[in-house]
Image (cartoon, rainbow, N blue to C red; front, side, top):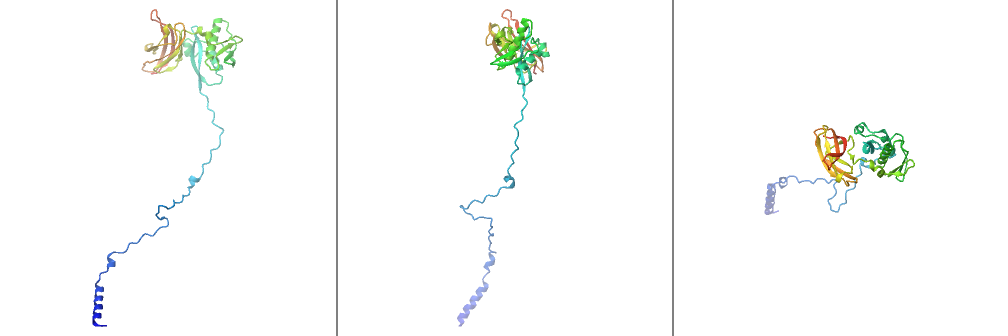
Length: 293
């Protein structure tokens, strides 16, 4: 080896010893997190994850309810029936609520024979029907009833009118046969009606304001006047209406009468005709009620 070669080698060794340590200036190389088995490779075409097994709670089927014998029969509600009694020699209606029964015709005649309540009797109602009169059968709309055992002709006819007008409220009855006599309907006793019949409110009923008054009438120019009286007899409400027929024919009427009272109290609903001669109240019908305050 000549001197020139030795000098070159010595220079290269000197330069190598002076070079900086570049590997330490960058710090340790970052390492990637190890792949996990649960992470599927990212791909738009990757299959959906397998369905998870249902939990025990969801998988357990609800046992069916034990069979039953059907719904228990509910008790039937009360039934309200219209009863026709006698007042001042004419028939007039009231209403009564009793436990429901399949034999409503028998119930109605039993109530008629039993007579009016204390409130109805105080309003002048009475019965002419003796106990023991009952319906033997109902065929083709005709109710067959035993003979009414009343000697007085007028009283017996009033009793028969009570029966006919009470039984024909039911859809299965159009007329009544007493004993072996002919079948007769309401028209056969229409002459025993008063000029004004109030069908609502009923005697003793609690009413609110306005109180709706319904009925039938045969009055001058079909005009029916109605007023409400408080416990002291003061007029607290009044109205009038026109029946569907009048002056020689009977028509239906309906009118709402507003009133004002400070507290609940006994009261009276009056329906009447205003006399064309002197303006007085005629053909008056009074119905005692309870006025709601």
